[in-house]
Length: 233
Ligand SMILES: NC(=O)c1ccc[n+]([C@@H]2O[C@H](COP(=O)([O-])OP(=O)(O)OC[C@H]3O[C@@H](n4cnc5c(N)ncnc54)[C@H](OP(=O)(O)O)[C@@H]3O)[C@@H](O)[C@H]2O)c1
Image (cartoon, rainbow, N blue to C red; front, top):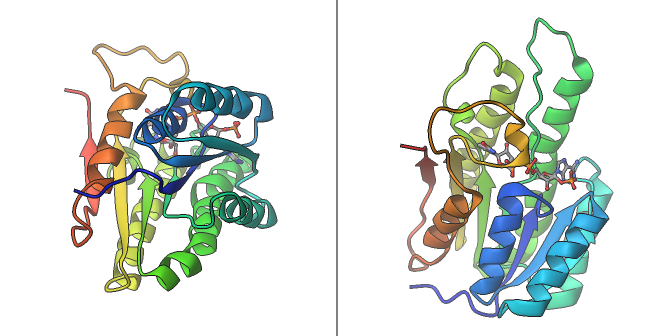
């Protein structure tokens, strides 16, 4: 089993929901966690809580994933603080209504810019270090909406199909480099992204996704868990 203690992970979207739960869990496993999102206050709260309790430590780096220079700065600050970036959890994302009929191009742009372009910027920025060291792990938070489409999820699903395509392509681009790629596709998770939509069953907790991430990370180094899909029962 891979030992995570002392490794460094960037978690994007760490101010809320799944990203926050992942950051707490990785710090509990002894990792140094670099927290990225736009909300400085919320990130600082997560940073403080980790640094006052968990075995690993955290630094908050306010970042806008839609701005490539901000994302480059994130990776640079992570490397300055901890010398290497071993893991990135590409989790920052937005789910807006965004049907094609609505013509709400601002919502389309937002989802495309964060869910696809932000993930590409971050992955591209960490890859040279990972490839150079012959080890690393990229975990992309996709969605079951990256496998299925409903009449209200056309644009969100398009971005999440793209995330899955990027994960599949990266696995091939990075074969034999020592860098692993895991695509994680959650069903409904209890986070602010879900809003006030009513549900008729117990949905997933963010910690369930964090557990899946630890599973993929702790496999022997020659084992590349490429896809995990998790739905509520
Ligand atoms: N909840 C679900 O049911 C579910 C299911 C499947 C997949 N997912 C995926 O899981 C991921 C996390 O979602 P969540 O449910 O945890 O939602 P959430 O609680 O709303 O968290 C979204 C995170 O993304 C960050 N973010 C948004 N735009 C950003 C930007 N431009 N730059 C930097 N960070 C940005 C937010 O931080 P700031 O606002 O502070 O920037 C926040 O930390 C998303 O990719 C989502 O698509 C969620």
